[in-house]
Image: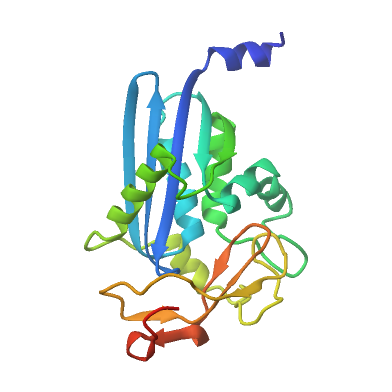
Length: 234
C-alpha cells in the first residue's frame, strides 16, 4: 500500500447528495445538499434571484464540500450530467489548463464556480456519481425539495458570477439549432417543453435548445410567450 493510499484510508468518509434548479432557466434558482457521515446528517440550501440550472447544480456541490472542516473522502451523488461528466471526464481540468477556454474560439462558462470546485476537490478526495433525477431516490428527492423551497424565498441575493458573465461580449448567444454547446461543443438540438403550465406562471418557452451529450439547456428570448397566448397543455 502506498503512502497516498494509507492517507486516503484515514480520511473520514462522507456521502454528499446534491441538486439544483431554476424556474424558469435562467431565473430564480435554488440548490440543496444533504451530508451524511455515519449516523449524522446535515442539510444545506440557498438560492439566487437570477441564475441557471447548471450553476445551481454546481453550487450544491460546492456548498456541501465547503461545509466540511477537514479533508474527507467524499462520494458525491448528483443527477446533473453537466457536473458529473465535467469532473469525471476531466473537462474542467482541461479548461483550466487551457486558460479557461474550451477551444480557440470559445471560453468556458461558469469559471468562477469551476475554480472553487476544483480547489475543493484538491482538498478532499471526491468521487462523483450520477443518479437519475426524479426517480424515487430518497436523498436526491430531498435535495430537490430543498432547492425548490430555496428558490421561492423572498429577497434572494444576486448571483454575481452569473450576472458578470452575462455582461461578457464573447459569450456566444444560443440562437439556433446546431450551435455548439457552451460546455462540451456538441451541436444543440431543439426541444419542445412537455410540462403543464403552473397556476402562477406568467410566461413560458415555446421551445428550448438542449445538448444531447451533457444535457445542458438553453432558453432563448425569441421562444418566450405570454401565458395569455399559451395553450392549456404544451
